[in-house]
Length: 415
Image: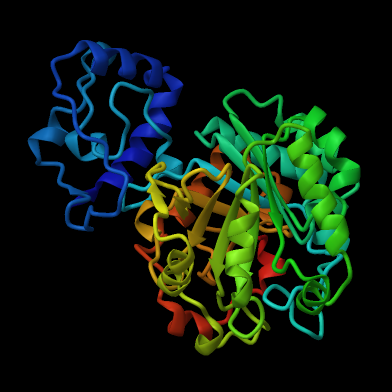
């Protein structure tokens, strides 16, 4: 019977930890004559490539009875960084994608009612007792960081309306191995909380701003707050955040006429304005005709700035980044609909009520809250997480199929 590399990893990982294998294996791989392999970041691996038969020489020679003769099977080395400790098998999917970025929603509540995020009639909030407690949020953060997550983004709802947000950030900052703590916020409360956020250890800020016209901002957000958001953006720059990311969901007939004004913002400010393609979620009345594609936006901007330069970032970056020469900031495009980046996805999401979503557009969820409250051990929780990650699909179903699927409103997922 063929054994997939993922199944091998899971079985192998479980026993290896007990004998301190990870440290020893990295030493042996470094010292041995095993040839280096090129890192695989994208989902070019097929299901067939991921199969590893026990009769395969790579598998039969993988382990001997002595720890000091361990070798790493080729089928597994394909998804590991060369010359580093093995990345957790629990967070590696069947396509070799390693998930080192976790987004945690701290609340379903928000002080705005943005059209693309929340249904006009509002949402039914989850009872407080069914939301993750502070201790549960930190327990899950610790577990994921131990397995290789090095970036956590706190989202909502609006995360800055959660009373204990500064405490949560401060405790996360203590987690060894966590390199980056980021927050996505609508910016309404940002100016007031910024000193505390910086002191607690927030590294990156993403601030939502869908219009530079106060009246239009209010129409899109169904609430006032434009001037508070701008105050928060400017204060973040003053306090040394560089670059400050500004998220703008572009919708035809609403704000696509402001593209050039947003780009102009980056001339003298260290901003990265990220133009996001309008995405379908429950209750946001998505329509293909309202979506302005990346290519259309880019063509329009290039008419004003034909020398726009493409910048090259990390393989797992969600945005395509451009810069107008001489401008202090830059712009980006989140092309989830017209040119998806599923092949390099390294992100997992935990909703405010404790469900793990391995794909933003997938409707499959697993309740980590219920597993936690059942008294499960870390090992048992990791097995649940691993099974969910293992079922992650190669890519999302496409914008038209997604628009017909039952999924949460964006506010209940976490932006």
